[in-house]
Length: 386
Image 1 (cartoon, rainbow, N blue to C red):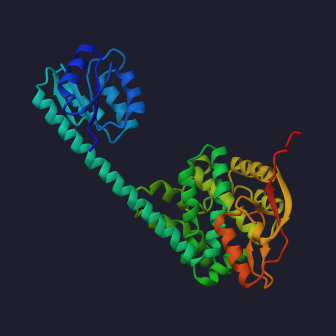
Image 2: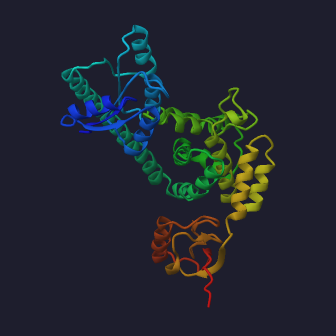
Image 3: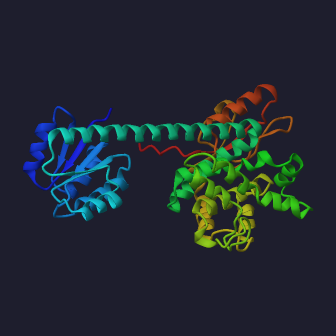
């Protein structure tokens, strides 16, 4: 059990006194003021408990503990002060979310009992957090594995987009983890579409029936409702729910949200997924990007700028070479579609080779020979000075 406690007080003799009486009961770290306390929280944590004085010259104890709550929400917060006014106590509990309010001088047995309770509270909170995180990771793995089993081709296409999504998210200063997870969940829509409708979607054919088109447009909202059943997936669910929302406010959901108010992850993935779909229908990078720009009002202009920048950088520092199957290595980018003699497309042009893709190509080559040589883009070897 974590029994580390941070004591914060501007009076050095108080800190020395409590350190002396508590050293056998807890692992004590002291800080002479709020600023030093916040630094200790960052560099010496995690702490199971923080005990702060109310009257400190830089920042009072209530404001300090409010900051502790933001930077380390699991840490149990207590206030130890000579102030006995009711309004101070109420403010401490309401604004600082204080676990205990203790007054000076605090008897040893009262302080140690409060600390024991604080340590147990910390253990409960962290145990619940760990359980939720394991539940979250397990739920995500099940959903992603379901996609991989049901639609392996689609899963590999989605996985191949991760590097591009990461780079664009960094360029646009978004949340990389949320956007990448939303990317993986975005293709779950394809698991619940009827096969005939899915075939039309993949071909890019517009359904003749308006009700079918509406069903397709609303698929992200169906996946959003599923994700909202899983704890801590609310932000990811929101990104997925707005995947078919146009930058100008059109599309689904049919609300008043538009422009920058649409989650950044939704705006980014809308462009990337549509770009990937166009590439899958035979368009090269330039053609696919031009098709996106022709859809006025659909995409965030800043997202399109980021996508264009990544396309232009995609072959920088790379050499175009020809290799055999056994020479393939992760990190190479396909310059052409990888196909078998029998006509099966294993990997499309422009996709970065991963270990999973390489293994798949090798396995197929044993059954239905892969057409060679394979043209790939490979990182340029650094020039050697003589």
